[in-house]
Length: 322
Image (cartoon, rainbow, N blue to C red):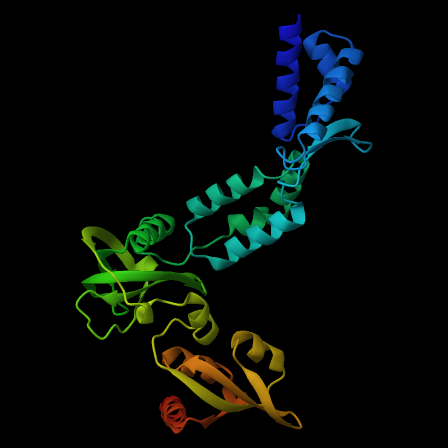
């Protein structure tokens, strides 16, 4: 009898862990015991959780007046608002295949309650149905990212088969040093295997169709260690280039949007609706594309090399409409 009771208590506990509502009367009928027996089982579970609070991540067996049942609450469960926010970010990045998205969402839903799973499904059903991933040349972004991360940890050189912007297929032997994510794409940052000057090169991971890891290991001097935080602060566009301080005039509607987009940006002067902004950025193609996207709201003041590049680009654009 005692062993049957223990088995019943374990079954009730595991059902609660899965997110099921625990109804005393229903379980009494299912196990052919009295409601008092089920109540004692629940009391035993509650006592166990209380005595082992740290081990059980502050889980509690609580009574829900709304559902007239017991449910398991845990610090480890994601609240619906937290889960909704995470899923929205994953859907918005568009870098994963639909199959990968469905798998990720399904696994995330296991960390919440049954009731909140249903609510979440109703909130995201249409967005999942209409989800479109960005075109990719690899079978799995997740697999590619993980292979590269492992090579970085082991400091092993790799050879990648890569599609360039013009769709030419090339191979590169490289020393991988970092993986970053920005606007729909994961990026691999690496040094060419035979580059003695250690100039970083950027590869979109979705364009890598094959990865071969070599046994050959590499070591980097400390000065060539990659600082992802510094890169994210100064280069939001994933185009290589030297760090430079730029100065420009902004007269658009949302100054905060500029400051958010360029983390190093600061307002150094203000005249009416015009703000003078300085920022440290990578002087690559990315910053030019971004500043041009602001149209006549932006006027670049320095450095002169960037002023000339902006002039040249706007002249080319103008010639398209004459």
